[in-house]
Length: 117
Length: 114
Image (cartoon, rainbow over all chains, first blue to last red; front, side, top):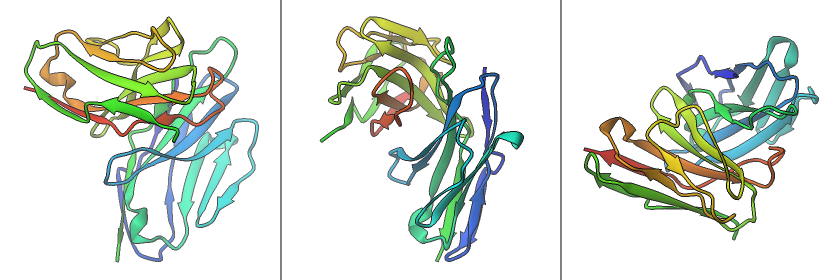
């Protein structure tokens, strides 16, 4: 079984500050995918990124960046120069892809990010 | 437009009255799944389906049933709903069983069981 932990339940920042959302995972599988999703106040889930466990390169997309460190089982998400529209609940998730593993997507409990004007 | 459609979006009902939440996707995806979202618990998988006529239990299957008779539809059935099934439910689909595609989520169904 796998587990995803997002220790930060709620974070508040002031607009233009940088903020990092932590994600730590546990899995016995050697190959897996990691995801980040955003859930704005309207309630839908928006896919942000997928990372293969083989690929430890960090990724940057505009103001978003992701730091994947297999050695510490972490997949942290940083928003640079935050904006009010970034206010949402952010979920980290993992799905194993090893042969024979159950294809279950496991979510963390989410981090509520509030960006104040 | 590629989408996952859930119905109804909102439902208030009473204990014991059978209900079905429908989920349909128009992307010819093989993999579909159901989740429930509860405060402080994130999303937990209820059931998933690798393909037609293939379904498996997720982490919290008790009190739920599913079926996958056609590729596009994956209804969630609550035979005898109870108040602890009050939750926000999401249906999701992805292209293949290999999970290398991001899951597409429906807009959610908010169920209240009185």
